[in-house]
Length: 149
Image 1: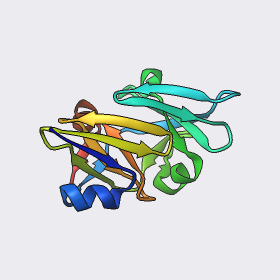
Image 2: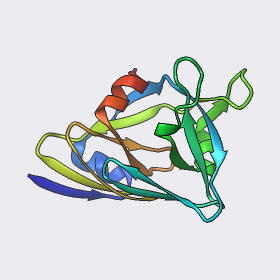
Image 3: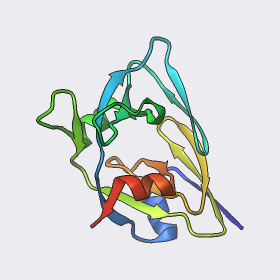
């Protein structure tokens, strides 16, 4: 089994090749980070959000209700660059295309995300953000939320 540590999308591409391009299907809203900051347990680690730099993104279910079980932190400046307001007040759709690479079988990958380190394995995906930042997407999440172009 091979182990890798990536802090940028360029490093991921250099090892695993070109990413797949996908459009996000889901809509989201956001809230501010609670005073003192918040931490989120994710599949491969813990992410930390702080009040000055982050929003908490909340996906919407198909019926339009909030899915608070799937909240995650996102840097404010990145959210503004990659999400667009919809006709529904406070609801956003992803304007930027997603770039993702599935972790090849037999590999363990630790990602240095903007909110903390995450360790993932196949069949999880490495997402490369608009600022060349990296983060993870679970395989089930990719199947439910992305349409490959």
